[in-house]
Figure 1 (tube, helix red, strand yellow):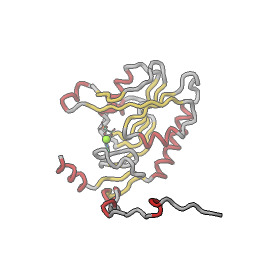
Figure 2 (cartoon, helix red, strand yellow; figure 1 turned 120 degrees about the horizontal axis):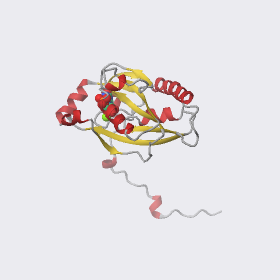
Figure 3 (cartoon, helix red, strand yellow; figure 1 turned 45 degrees about the vertical axis):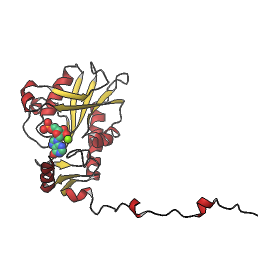
Figure 4 (cartoon, protein in one colour; figure 1 turned 90 degrees about the vertical axis):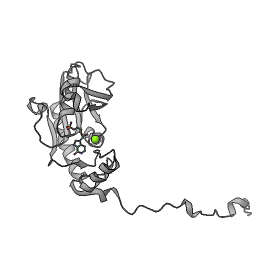
Length: 219
Ligand code: IMP
Ligand code: MG
């Protein structure tokens, strides 16, 4: 049996240029976290409970007109991925990205839609999936905007709630599903960001104040 000779170029090892080498990072994102407050297992277990409740509450929904799950970008992505898989119903999923205008517009009740739904909400049962309710202002303006489209119903499922007074709390049945009540601290991870970072942390934790300070300096 004869074995072909390797081509000359393949026989010669490639020189590793040391300049290619990138030192592995010594730290990780977790170095910026003061302490964790919720781990992945806790979030998933809660998503299972909420998904079961939603499945029960909407069990009579017509398959011809499925529940419209509205995921708010970008913070709710991780929670929504867990929650949606726990809802055993016909569901259509859509996405919206909204931000409130600055202080000057706070009284105008206007929300700036950066990416709108593709679904017509008129006559549809809709469930808004949110990451966190802090002041609740963005959410209450978003609800006003979506209500104007005349859905059959519009409820909110939020993963986290900081329990501050806000108008939507006074609307009966609106905040129908809430994951966890948390202290009034800035949290990141599991979809939640600080300056667009940390969304990929597989748990929720409180950001170290020194990281905020670093961010302020860079501005
Ligand atoms: P709100 O209008 O004050 O309720 O907050 C609007 C948005 O700010 C939320 O949907 C989040 O995207 C973001 N946010 C509020 N609190 C936190 C936090 O503790 N960590 C990360 N994002 C937050
Ligand atoms: Mg954010």
